[in-house]
Amino acid sequence: MAVNIENVEAFVYVIHCGSFNKAAEALYLSQPSVTARIQSLERDLDCRLFDRQGKAVRITEEGRRFLPYAQQLLLTYQKGKLHVNRKKSLPEEIKIGCTVTVSNYVVPELLPRLTAHFPNTHYKFVTGTTDEIVGKVLNKEVDIGFVRGVNHPNLHSVKFYEDPISLYVYEDHPFIGMERLSVEQIARQPLVFFECGALDWLRIHRIFENLDHPPNIRIQTDNSEMAKRLVLGRTGISFLPGLSVRQEVASGKLVPLRMPETDGIALQTNVISNPGEHGQFLNEIIAIGQQFNAQ
Image 1 (tube, helix red, strand yellow):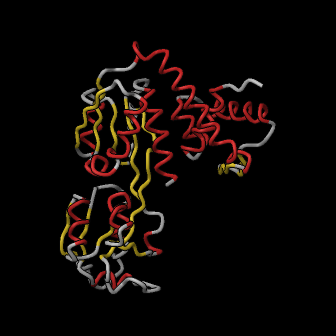
Image 2: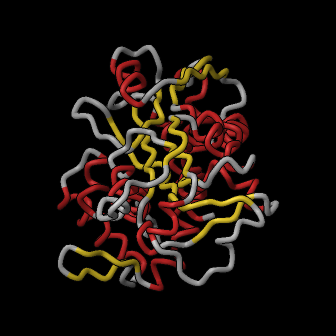
Image 3: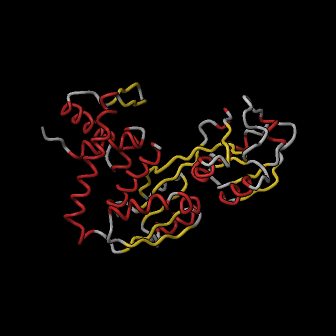
């Protein structure tokens, strides 16, 4: 049985993007084309890969079992393509723009994997705000950008990572072990507010909007590393993205506290580029992003 690699690619993109529509946008195809590719793959495999309920799409158990093989097929194909076309298609240097958070917490894990796949390429990183990085990609000052979850009509944009926001306190804080925390209790604590300008961040503010008194915000900063260190120093407690505190949580120096009010709030990082450029790097970055989200 011969399996069409484009059908496998469509399958992986539907799972990564979360819908047929978004997969079609990422692949620069129409939705019927993506649907036709999935149906063709289902005929080849003689099973259903997705359950469709209205607009909602859910992967079946057969699809879940096939996914790791599909990813490996794509990776093997991309490696073969890379080997054949390495000299004529891979740049000697690739410039990557990213936000400070990505440079601090994503790049150290991303870069070793990129260099393993593209050992002859050199990398140059620049940091900036999302708007700055978007401008640099548009002006071709950088090749690929990592930005907050934005879409631009002139850029190819794909979700890379979703980073949940939670409330973090230092070890031995009196809130640890409490079954239920009220918004009023949190509002009275000294708060270190990290803000990155993302729309989802407004939802953190809305948690406190119905209180009689404003929250006790002692310090505001746009730097997650600074906010984290202030919590470690017991200056206050803070709502922080999970990537920035992974090591401290693992060592017990910071403790996440679950609040129903923050469920579903996350910072989304997208990978952007000019359409049709640096496809090999983007495919590898997206594959790494799938591994990040699975952790």
